[in-house]
Image (cartoon, rainbow, N blue to C red; front, side, top):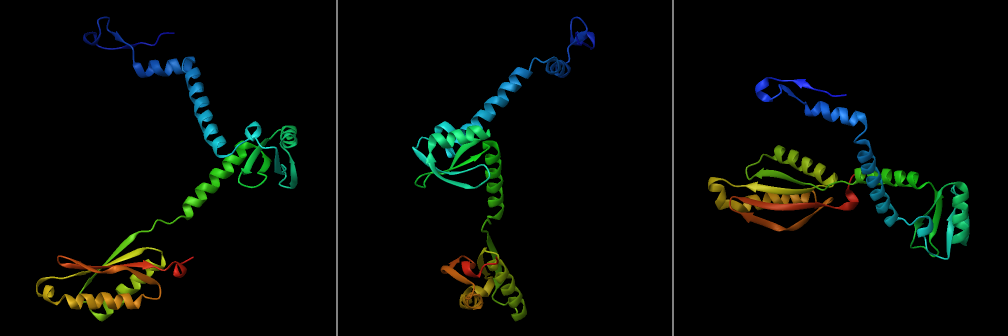
Length: 225
């Protein structure tokens, strides 16, 4: 079967031109690319199996004289020769997986390796979700900040610290305030005292140009659970 698409004569000497996208679909449909796609899938799965078997030895790759065996129902069998463990796994139609290689003797479990890999991947994803990335939050202050506004800022700072984030306090000076930086230092010290129960400081107060900085780090035992 030939698929042809008519086009103006000036685009092709014979006045006809094969549409590449249609041709590709026809070839795929006709089955020419199926072997290549199948080979790609096989190689991909093979690489994944290599990675997993390097992390966890299975079946004939477990080269120890004896193992502490857990059967397919999760019940402990005890210490058995490796040959017996392999025979049990083969009889159940499942794999023998070394789940604790550091133990003496190593702990092995009878389980389908594909199921084991799926459960392991699921646990790793859940673990990553629980991990929190520590962020550096900046809170800017002025030397002439009102008392109420400072209380609001301190409340916000405490929230950041309780969430496990570091906080950088920045006091900004302008005009004549540059000659009274001690006022800015006093504000930083006041904030530090107000959050001393949940945070420590990273170094001392530092100044650069028209700004002064102080970084607060949360105390782990005070973090929100």
